[in-house]
Length: 369
Image (cartoon, rainbow, N blue to C red; front, top):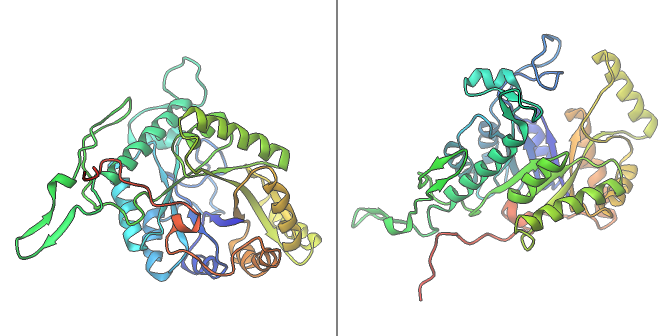
């Protein structure tokens, strides 16, 4: 069973705690505007944190402090350039010695679009001007395709580094990607050598058919939000069908279930803590996924039940990082190990290796006759 952690405010101490618990990777949230309690616009609240550090820079800072755990920062594809992100994640893969990934997401917030002065975005496909939100996912798919091609634009042995002759690169092993699409025109090659993993992990969160299609077309891991095993089974079936339609039926694709978790010694204690948090916030906690309150044993039971729906792992979101993450590493992990459902030591040196994914061949490399 694969288990990772995702949270908006993970710092160095929390990430090293996740590594102590032998988790596969952590995801680090990001956005192009301040956090908001409203889905598509900013709010005026001053009693909650607004603003955050860049996720890719956080991952790069934490990488030298860790040895095994994967680092997966969020990247907003809508208003950033794939060339810059490709080299940033490639650099992270070098800094972490093969433990990098990215979580690609779109932005449909008008205030973020206005900040960049590029376009307005509408949340439906009604003909009222602006860019349909479905197009944002098509754009994100092209974005990832460009990033992947740029990672391959250097063959693995393109660097010569021959001081005697002054040759650093074999230019025949650098490749123009010549991508021409609806949203991007990119010639390449990259300015960063091919990453240690060849292709760092691409992940995405999906709630319905259009983002499922993005996962099926371009991701190595999709995060989904089922509330029970039957719903998980239906989601996995839809993603697998989209994967086949995209011509990727033979490629590995993990589907992880997301859960918000509040862990305590008893279910009553966990529910009481959630009630206190709701009172402090002045409103009930709402999430895009199931909110679990209970013990580590109960959570292990739930994970095993959800896994029968075809999920290959889980991304757990600690409701309160300082409380619930140590509960995951200190209580849940030992319980899963007792059930022989989780590793007892890291068994690979790269993130792809931890997830059972092989290092892909370079699409541009030619094999000598």
